[in-house]
Image (cartoon, rainbow, N blue to C red):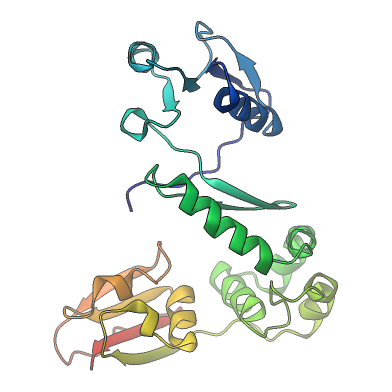
Amino acid sequence: MHSLPLFHRLTGQPVIVVGEGDAAEAKRRLIERAGARIVDADDPDARLAFVALEEPEALAAQLRTRGVLVNVVDRPDLCDFTVPSLLERGPVLVAVGTGGVSAGLAKAVRLRLEQILPASLGSLAEALGAARAQMRARWPAAADRRRALDAALADGGLLDPLDAGSAERVDRWLNDAAGGKAVAVSFCVTSDDPDDLTLRQARWLGTADVVAHESDVPPAVLNRARADAVRILLAKGEGPPPCAGTIVTIRRG
């Protein structure tokens, strides 16, 4: 990854915005929506700054020496952070970024996602948030909770995020769902292209606790796994280690 995406809480926090014109106004609107206070460049408490100037180098360098993280509009080479294209569904925020390479591409991808993700997605998130205590009571072990939720949220599952009626089925899921069970699966890949994975293989990778793989499995395929999944390198023909969670073993076919 070229950057680590983070969601930064800004409610009540001072944020510097310097500049005039459409670009600066767009940043001000964005920061105000996030609940921050817009301040001048000399505010000593600000830790984030947006600069929209014709010649931003001197101010950006000055702010950086004070420990302020700086975003310079249309100058990714001067940015400590970039702003993704945002899709909002209630508490669900989807951020699409390119590290400043192409804001137009990020916007196009976000607009395509706008057509796919239903308005009810926010209601589903709120229902799951309200059910957090019930989920802990039903599945005391965090790994069991995650596996049960993964199964429910899978394509065609009871809480499929793309199904507009999912939010209304959270209580039914809590009453009827089977406990999350550990799963061990394996498959072979014959292509370096991760788009050649089947939907089932991609789902296994996306939910696995552990990914065991031989050295010739393409990195692009491994990158379809959860970012925090444990990766274990296997010798040729070696079997996977015991695992209490979900483990996926990948070999080159």
